[in-house]
Image 1 (spheres, rainbow, N blue to C red):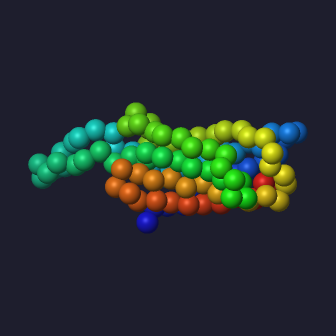
Image 2 (spheres, rainbow, N blue to C red):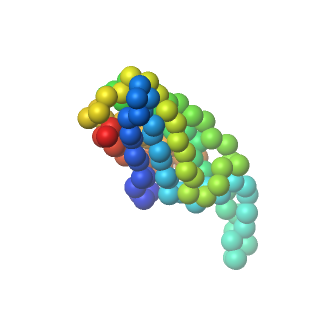
Length: 103
């Protein structure tokens, strides 16, 4: 299982800003290990976010995103105490879901 994401959500006026730090190796191309075996690309493809079950984010990544990516976004309609849930899926169908409470 992947390492936990760092998820922060803070309300600033009418906007809620969400910041994510995702731990992932993000291999973007074919490569070979020291034994000459092929290593396939392995990176986060999709990120989805919800606030109290309502969709607030849907992003598709390509192979050009760096290792351990940082990502932030803003949305309207959240209140202090609401739950923000972030889920990512990578090219090997591994998933990770983490949550934060809007502060």
